[in-house]
Image (cartoon, rainbow, N blue to C red):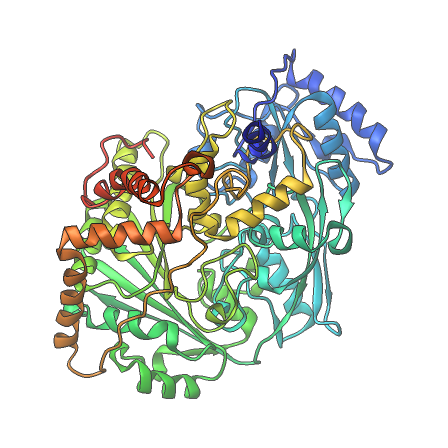
Length: 639
C-alpha cells in the first residue's frame, strides 16, 4: 500500500502525461473556449490578431509563428503533431490564466521561450491528445540596473537581446550565459546554462538572484513566496518541471574594457601524434580562470579533420601571450592571431558572426548558421582521452562526414562550486564537456538515418573514456536516447531513475522531493518536460550506501617528452581495462557504491550474504553488457 501511494505521488514526473482522453470538434472551437476562459481570469487585454494563431483561420501565419522559434527542423516535418493553436501571452497574467484554463478545458500545454530544445519538446507533444503551444516570445522586457549590478529579464527574451541591453548601459558589465544569440533565456537558465566565462563566473544559473514562476495553480511566485527549495530546483533542474518561468533576476558580473579573442585552426597532419590536443586536455581546465579555450572538430571536404581552438581571455593580448608561451606553447599562438575588443564585441565573435559586425546582429532572430535537421549527444570527461581513444573518435567523425565534436573546458570557478549548490552536478572532477552533433538539410535526405546511427555509434565507442556510474549528460542537450516514457503511459519509475541520474546524479533525489511538495497529480496537463526526465525518490528506491566514490585524479605529465608521455598514458588506460575479470569486480563495487540497486523491502528478511549475492546477480548482466563498447546500433531509431 505504501509503495502504491509512493508511485502515485511521483508519477507526475514523467516527460509527458496522459490523465484522461478529451474529444474536441476543432481547434477553432477549442480556441474560442480558451479565449472566453482567459477573459474570465485576466483583466489585461490581449489583441486576438497578434496573440492567437490557428491553421483553420490563417494557415500561413500559423506555420510562420510555429516555425519562427523552432530550431530543430526534425520536429517540423509533416509527420510531427502540430498544436491546435498557438497563444502568445503579452502579460504575465496571461500565463497564469493559461494554466487555469488548460486545467479547466482538459488540454495539454507546450511552453516555448527560444525553441532550442534539442528534441523539440518545447513545441511538439508526444501525446495523442490535442495540445496548445504557449509561445513566450512577446514577454521579452529587460530592465538593467547598473547601480545595483542586476537585471530583470523576461523569459521570452533571447540571450543576444540581454547582452545587447547590458552593453547599452555599461562597457564593464556582462553575464555568463551561452554563445548562441537566439537561445531563449527562460529555458536556458533552467538547465544550468554555460558560456565562455564559465571558468571565471560559473553558470548562468549560479548568477540568478530571484525569479518569477507561475505554478500549477496559476499563482505567480517570487523567491520569497516559492521558498528556497523550489528556487534551488529551477536553477538547473530542467525547464517545465515546476511551473512556467516568466522572468529571472540576474547578477551582472564585472568584465574588463579589453577582451582578447583568437581562433587557431590545426589539421590532423599539423598535430602529429595528437600532441597539441593531448596537451590541451591536460592543461585547459587548469589555466587561469580568465582564459577559456574550446575546441571544435569538423570534417573538411578532403576527408580530414580540422581542430578549431577558439579562445577568449578577459584581459589584454600582452598578458595572454605571456600565459600561452608559459603554459601552452604547442598551440603556436602569436600576437597576429589575437584580436582585442570590448566584451560585447567578443560576444558577437563567439556567436559566429563575421568580424567585424555591428552588435545589433545580436537582436536578429537567426544565427549565422541557419537552421537544420540535427541530432546531438553529450558526455563529461573526468580524465584526458588517451591517444587510442582519440584515434577512434576521429575515425568515427570522418565516417559520419557531416558531424562535429565540441570540447568545453571546465575547472576554475566550476571546480569551486559544490555539486549540490544547484541541481547541475557536473562540477569538481570534470575536466571538459563533450558535445557530439550531426546535421542534414532536407526532410527527404536519405542519409539522415545513417547519420543518426553513426552519431549513436560514436557515442557508444566513447564509453570507456568518459564519466561512468552514471554516464553523465547535460540536461540542456536533452537526449531521448537515454530514456523516455512510452506514449500515453505513466512513468516506469524504476527505469526512469537511471536516466534521471545521468542528468542530475545525486541531486536527483532532492528534485523529486521538491516536486512532490510543489504539485499534485492532475493539477495541470503538460505535453512534456522542457528540460528534465523523471527523477528518483528515496521513498521508492533507496541507495544501499550513501558513500560516494571520489573523482578520479587526472594523470599529470611532464611538459617535455610528449611522445613517451602519450604512450605511457595509453598504457595506463590499457592496464586499467586489460583484465576483464578484475574490471568486472571493480565495476561491480563501483556501481554498488555510487548507485545502489536494492529495493529495501525485498531483502529485509535475508542474511547479509544472501543480500550480497542477490545484489551482485542483478548487477552482473549490466556489467557484462558494458564491454563491447563499439558494437554498432542496429536501429537508427533505437535508444
